[in-house]
Amino acid sequence: MVTRTTVYADITAELIYKDGDNIVKDAIEETIPKCDSKEKAEMILEKEHKGKIVSILTCEIREEKRGMSDDDFFRYSHVINPKDSE
Image (cartoon, rainbow, N blue to C red):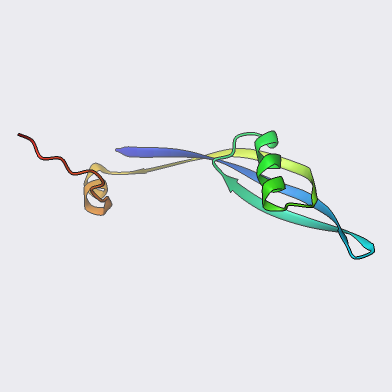
C-alpha cells in the first residue's frame, strides 16, 4: 500500500482594503494545502492578497490521508528517473 498524507488549513477570513475613498470588507473562505498553522495561512493569504489587510476569523487544520494498492501505483504512476543497471 502506498500512502500520502496532506495537511490542509480551512480558513475563513476578512479582507480589508481601500477602494477609492471607501473602505471595503470582504469575507473569504479558502482551503490552503500544505498548511499546518494559522501563522503560515496568514502569510500565504497576505502574499495572495497584496495591499489588503488579512484578518483570519477561523482556522481549522485537518489531515487527509490517501492510499492506493501497489498494483494501482504501478498502473497509474509514471517513471520520473529511469536508471539502467550495469
